[in-house]
Amino acid sequence: MDRRSFLKGLGITAATTAFSAVQPRPLSAHSEKIVWRMATSWPKWLSILQSGAERFAKQVEIMSKGRLIIEVFAGGELVKALDVFDAVSKGEVECGHSASYYWAKRIPAAQWFTTVPFGLKVKDINTWLYSGGGMELWNEIYAPYNVIPLPGGNTGIQMGGWFNREIRSEKDYQELKMRIPGLGGKVVAKLGAEVVLLPAGDIYKALETGKINATEWIGPYHDVQMGFHKIAKYYYAPGWHEPATNFEITFNRSAFDKLPSDLKKILEVAASDLNNKVLADFEYNNAVAMLKIAKERKVQLRLFPKTVLRTLERLSAEVLEEEAAKDPMAKKVHAAFKKFKKDMNTFALLRGGDQRI
Ligand code: CA
Image (cartoon, rainbow, N blue to C red; front, side):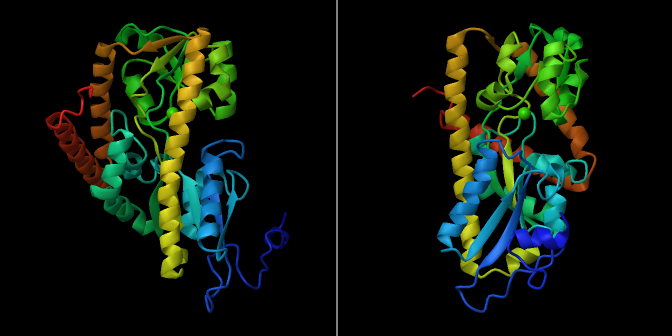
């Protein structure tokens, strides 16, 4: 489809807007309708995340009384799933829904705003971002790219993954061929595991045929949709490598700055609502799926041994120091993140947060 017919299909003519640059229509009157495009990194069928992005657009439409319409495009429909940040930065789309750790190669500091191994749990990541200085840092690292970020949902603590080998000690990692991307992969590689990177569509077959003998994915709800419970012996917890995966809503700053203040506020409030709703959807659906897995007893539920977890934690700290040393901004973010985590852990102890009440 060429550019003209594509724009026509969206009800936009070349005379009023250019595909390659953000040019919202002038706001001479409040009744004027602005049409924005959102690109996401999710497949169309991915519930909670793609449906969350669509819900965000609907909320904005309702709150703005139809003055701001956001057309949502799944990964690959308008831009490739992993080109969302670039598209928002260049103004090819006005906003995006994705995860900051996808841009880690280009922006090493971005990883801390999604999740890092043995990082913050969901309550603390929201506290850090909204009130503990996190948003100021996140805005600082995205400013050179003309992008404004906001938290856009969280998976809560993920699962450790599906294994066809039992993990009794650190030595068992030497026999592991695991699909585990990002920093988690770097950590298990230190224990001798072979880290395999696979696109989502190839993981099931690789686990079934023994090309890999372990994989992590997300949590029970999405994992069961992938069918891993049919071909794995063990389902391990906790997901130490992704203790609270935070997503991002991003806006092209030039487009955002042109909006009247009430529409800016509506976007902020809708993003905050999305952050709440996505987490609640993950937690509830994961609980339902996990109880079903436990009841069926086909897969053995396991916790990583405490000694293994402590080793993984020590190696994770090493990996984070290595990542932080790559770039001055990453170093700054890592230092702020570590201090915040330490302070919150001390506070939790002082107020008896770990005691059952
Ligand atoms: Ca994961």
